[in-house]
Length: 443
Image 1 (cartoon, rainbow, N blue to C red):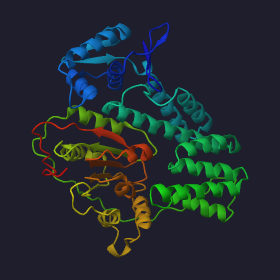
Image 2 (cartoon, one colour):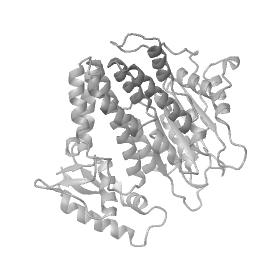
Image 3 (cartoon, rainbow, N blue to C red):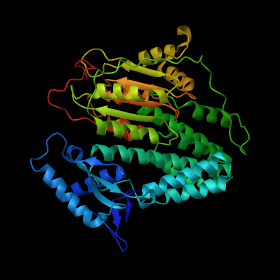
Image 4 (spheres, rainbow, N blue to C red):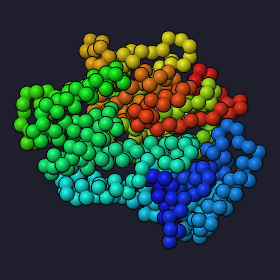
């Protein structure tokens, strides 16, 4: 038995590929595949499929879906859909699902890059990317676990593209990858790593004017969509191209300024006697397994009293040891009716906490954002942005390096962060009588 999720969901029974009939059975199978090797309770399946208002027959309906899926997946103890306590477990091997094969090939490609074996890296990365048949789980309803997994897989796909194309440039295949890079930049205009690769491919192919045009287009997109200047890497590439530096090698960028090694510890106190949310904590924990070339960004949303701040603070305390360079935290007051914190105010506080002298903190937003990202360039820092009002309040506060994690809470969906910034999303249903202790009723 094999499964494909890198595209529409499909099941191989040894003879043919089959689709799962019905959106809700597809969602149940997708959740079981995401949690393969671990038990998923029926309560969680009900919560994911129906949210706050499940029908009275929800449990029986889930049992019916599982019976249908068992006819496709089998019930063996080694391989199959088996009962575990008050739930179900899909027992499969990593290579039984295309996402597992993808992860193995990408890991082999990154090992090749680390060892300087560019041809091997290109081969493995290309094989992994060829497994994709379209957007992951394209025909599955967007329940919370599916949304988080789709965002995670898409970020891995983009990072793998960037790694493969960077290796191609390292092998001197500049002209050969220009068209592919141009297409990817059109599809992901805010992905600065892709734009940097396109600029270098054009420049090294003798197309200096087009390389500079690619930079100017990126600058316009950043200004329009984010209200920011491009990142340091793109600006330094433009400077090197304008200066006419040799195009037969990687254009060099200077080292960012180094701030004193101050490790802030700004997390609020953990919530006393925190209980529940085991499924949500597992979903959040999976974010730490990602191997990305960008920071991990996740949003936790829900109505007032749903417990999003309590969950975010509790999880941040559980994982803070993974971020030895510190934890930054701020209440952005974006949904409380008072004056929201402006991004430049939040950045000024963060920079001071990171050791920048107050007199050296920029007053212009783009300069403060650039300095913030430079200071965090080689650090592992957790950033908690509580009570965000809109994506524009958050974007200047996002680090640029893959060693950082950003956790954002909000009463609003912040869909722009998911669509444009690769954020994952965890929506919390309201629970009767539940009080968000950490927020004292505010978020």
